[in-house]
Length: 329
Image 1 (cartoon, rainbow, N blue to C red):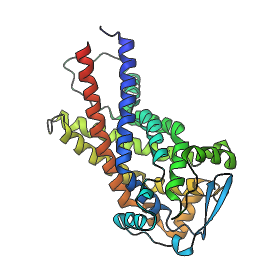
Image 2 (cartoon, rainbow, N blue to C red; image 1 turned 180 degrees about the horizontal axis):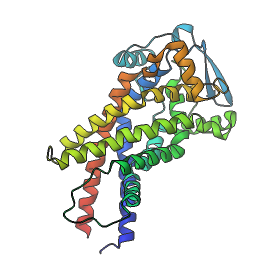
Image 3 (cartoon, helix red, strand yellow; image 1 turned 30 degrees about the vertical axis):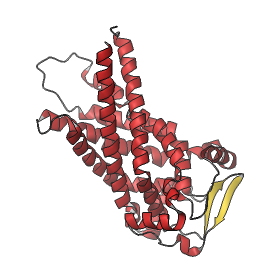
Image 4 (tube, helix red, strand yellow; image 1 turned 90 degrees about the horizontal axis):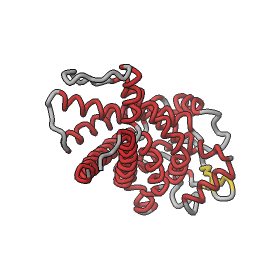
């Protein structure tokens, strides 16, 4: 049965959202140990002999040996090895449940709604004029950037609580578990820090993810279309792989400073910092500008690996669904 224009657009939108969420979860599971290593490296150097974590029944003070908060992690592989040796392999996946919840809420919006939002902005720019068959395709960079900023910021509003919980689990000191479960974490943070404690670090996270969305999704979109337009590559896995690597590198370079600030602000005890700006100021003063790129190597490895896994999965799922729908028509 033929679909009407409205129903077809709705189905396409739902398919994009579902495939984006599925691809995001698969990529997150594959690269989560790298993300845990990144978080540990980013919070390394925070001066504290007692790590404050929002725990069940209130804000817990978890005693940590002074040596445990010293510079115990060195490099990506060294960090992962240390975590496995001191805490076991499962610790590399601390916060995985919240991470997968985050992907369902986050990627489904920032990627699933990207094409629709891009078309909307492009319609505003060109006045919804019909394209001529002989018209040369355009990169439409402005509409892509605006769509990336919009869906990136919007996704954070949905996914912020899951990001807070994920970071708390990943940043927990060796041998400690701040919450018995992900659900308990949500309840505890809301009870001890207020409902908006679940949105701690919202401003830096909006900034980070808007930037990441532009440098990741928009970069992938432009690189892929440019390679196709100029005949450099054919549509397929090699093209998706190449575009994903470029997108991951751009996202790491641009977003790392905001990511470090976001991680420290989210993991801070209530009242420790008045704002994300104060976090950045103290970091620059106490640790130097290099602190903003702490964990750069695992961030790069994680983002590039995540992009490769996510984009290839997403493109393959989208292609499979498209072929299935063509058969049904």
